[in-house]
Length: 459
Ligand code: BES
Ligand code: ZN
Image (cartoon, rainbow, N blue to C red; front, top):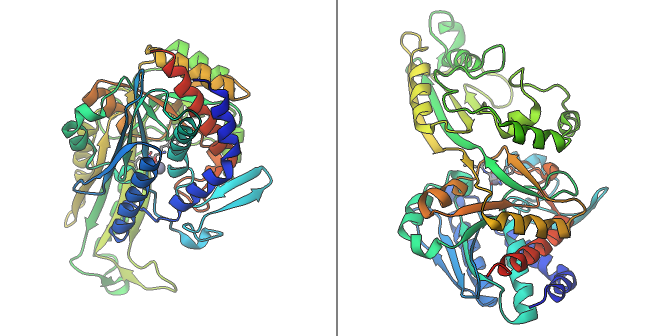
């Protein structure tokens, strides 16, 4: 079966493909907010119907949370398992969007056409690149070049609570020769990337309680301990003056970067100034003795993602609040053990509590870092296929984000996973005005068509 008519078909079909993506983007499948539970069902139904229309045996599978979508196509050759997620992040702060996040559109920008809307890049646009590649193979040849299982999750953005049990229960169905994950980015404008290292994630929500009720800050301020002050003190003590995290034993299991990888990364020519400049910054924060790329790809970090308490509305209120809250997350690398770190963090913060205050914790996800085995022949086949599509050859890179399933494929199903995606740093994922370049969508689709072709030659 030849590849070139498939690529031509993708080119000819790009407008219809974009319209299909816009349809999917209109469904507000925010997984973390229970108000959008029905929308998550609708998105799963939409995907099932679309996959059925191109010959997959597709179904929506219930979980205690949002459903999974599983689809099979019994083609020849190697069995690839493709993963993406149909859930999206919340849209707030909504007033910073230039359009309704769920009324997506194609916009002309100085850098070319973009698809604007929540989920366009993370991850609906990306998962549709794979579906569109399959559609073009089907349309042109009446079949697909390999045996394919598609697995879409609806809880990735909220810590994947149903994922491990689902993978264990459906292990046989979800296991193939290699997993393909489309939820990462390019390295710069014209360089495709295969991610070989992914950081883990540990989330923790903290509530400090001081007085039993909100108080007048003039009547009680002074003698009554303010929980916001306690929380601020705790947060300020999570890093030392060298930018290192101070939780006891936090760096256990953090490896030094091997020389060959350090060299490879240096050769990528990453410009920290440009990277920070794009977001209005100029001076790297973080560990003083590390490069920006190391800090993102191979060093663990601690970030406060949210902090609230007291009066935050318009005007002013002289309140001494009863409670203060924060959401804190840690990116993990190497062999760092998320459960041990959670335990150490809780003990560390509890020991800082002044008299009369209480602390409560609630955990949000705990996934270790994962390292891909690039010895599997699929890696070089995919690298060549990508290099044929893009101006520059594909690079092996790290990734600062976390995609828990990458490690689970190995741990629970014994499969290697290849992380290939077409997002860009300026896609504003998780932020207002998220977009996906039309070129990412189009060339991403062409890339998958080429990768499927390359993998099928392995049979
Ligand atoms: N697509 C991202 C992961 C990612 C981030 C890839 C940045 C490339 C660059 C994924 O959807 C994501 O956001 N993951 C969350 C995981 C979490 C909510 C459990 C993350 O990394 O914060
Ligand atoms: Zn995301």
